[in-house]
Image 1 (cartoon, helix red, strand yellow):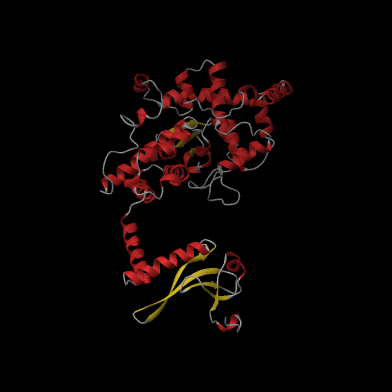
Image 2: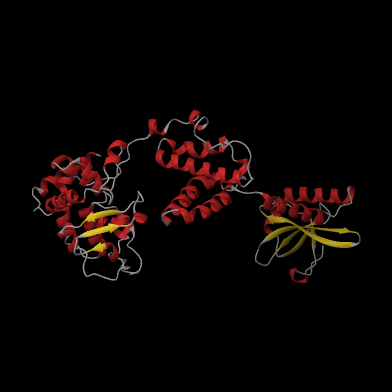
Length: 424
């Protein structure tokens, strides 16, 4: 054995064992069992296997892999395989590996993964979507629920078992989400078929296929309600909310007074507000149904708007970035600071619906129109050409008057709420 030290760079011949592999100092340590195999230990402590061989008069060093990912036994096995290739088939093992890697790269270039197909489909569809939210929803759903199992699969390799494996764990728990996910997976695979990168039936299709393997969504879907404030508590809540300053509390109060969705309020610009007429017109591009919606503004709602800004300016901008809207979390944070994390911003629409239905004589269609809901009855919807604006203004004035009431029996309401929470 050469004993000049590690700095000389000369390989040291030892019979390697699992222990010596772990403790060998920096340098090259030749294995006495398999010819040409050595352990290379860097000054940093990193260890890797190298096979030295000669082919056609030239010496070559071929890396086999790092230790401990490649154990001593596996390194010896790999070195013997390469030596057999060299001795029996007269083939340079290093050149053979490079050729195999090149072929694998060519094959990979021809594969269209599910993730790549989904990304291309979203990009092609995006210009036709009303707003960026649709693209985000597609990406988020696929990234979190489909990509972990399907993302790296060739689209041709996605079969029924793979699709069911993604859907089944959430089918009963998150039925609506799972149903949308199935539709999106189906769309991605149809897109791949249109590109000529996939053949055969779509394993994500519902009718005549998955409907035999999964229960109908209507059979398992539970009613999903956003946690809502009991309408009886609304005046006390609004009185407490009025004590808080800042854009988020004002935006929340405005959303409650108008029964609007959080995103509609947070994206509201001054150009949408007609001060003289007392009307907020939300363009169809910002509405869930894609249809323009007029909202009558009560005096209480207008009082929350403050000084008018430029048409393109946000009414409730983020304090940190005036050109960006408040985040939905900012409104939720207001609820949490008020110790009302048991309700959601969207749930106040349910509070409004319950109040209107239980305590007023306003017609159901007027209430539904105030919430920008589509009438489920197609015959009824066909006759509802107008937006019932005058009647809705009276409804919203009654709602504002109710919210402005002096809270009574607040302690009783609070006690009842605490009892409900304790029971749950």
